Image (cartoon, rainbow, N blue to C red):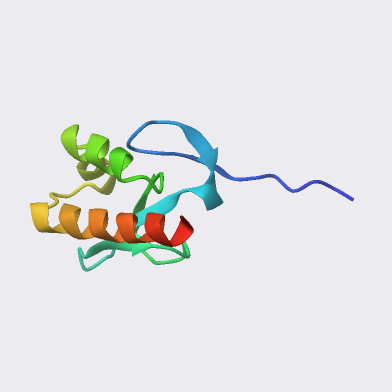
Length: 93
């Protein structure tokens, strides 16, 4: 049986390359709405980040997420993303 190729993606916070399933996709929809994409299937421009709030803080400080998504991101969006990441971290324990 042929072994399937595992898609790899880089985190915009720490730049580590990891399997796509281990990372969380942040997407900018065609309407310009930024949100987490837990399934990885939403339409729009995406960027990947580790499920770690520290990586989101690094990406925010260097404006890497804004560069990847090609748009300005307000503080309230970052705060909402951080809350969602922290809640996911608590669920995974």
